[in-house]
Image (cartoon, rainbow, N blue to C red):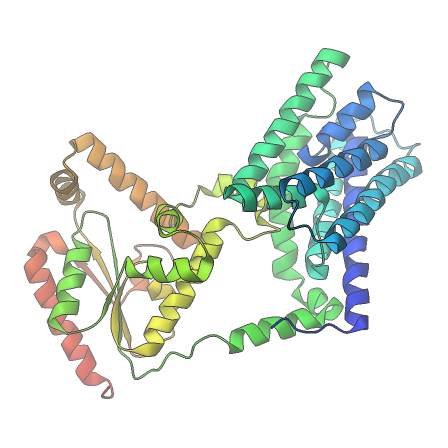
Length: 441
């Protein structure tokens, strides 16, 4: 049940939110003054203001916001919250007005030296990011474009971050084409657009990680909500023995894990976690199976941070949280064997647990994948590389551990050195010895 908010809290939340909007407006005004390119979300209004200069960039921003609100109503006519629409209308006018207001205040500021223009751009990115951070603390609404993309994601079932990247790419490209066609030069989309995309998400995270004291001071209720959420997490009994098994693709890790679970008469959880997580997250099982470890490279994540991940949980984040909760619940119920999904990280503080990593020489893994999948050596090598990259990126994003690093496991073993059967037997003996040193369960 949602916590009832006091009038004081509501006032502070809306005050912070609108302060954030005004700071974002100031950041955008600085980007415009730098003449090095604006953020994608402002590229279309700014370009229109250059071409059809009878309306200001703020006025075009307001018109764009109204169109975005209308599109939300058209896309979801039966599920429209009037209060949210009204708030978005107010935000739209505040956003547009303050962009023009700040540009008016800085009308005498026209930097010419490139280094000054770059400094103006970077200052704009920092202020814009701080405004977004303040918005997150308030947590009461979103700008019309963000809301439109959120509605689109819900209606189509597509990823929010993918829609954001597509939308902003289209807006930036359309703005660039319009500038070249009507003005004969690039004005609104330049190197500053790329710089903003690559830096703002990281700056927001920097604020989130280092200004927790400010966040707690401005909105202490957020701390209470986080504490309440923590209390609701299942308590994992230390009397339960939990075996987590991570493995390299092609090492025979799943086969070994199943044999261990069968020999020790322990419940085995692998793909079963997908079904359980699907019920918690609302995603289809097939969708979770396809996306649970599909994390892009660090460079792409930095870019996608700006396009919504800093504001909204990405699909992999939602899936990871759902699976983490499932893993905690499984460990709370009984002794068990859990395969993959960073269970060793999620249960790292469980005293009565054992974490195993199964590896094998690359040549052996390639042969196993070729035999299992019926594919060529080249295809097998590529699959192994792809799986390794996805698991490495997944581990890097959601934990402070390095995937495959022996320091993060109690036992690391090469299956090809002993064979699958012997490896399973060795591990079973070691597990039994370990369990004898623990209190009975």
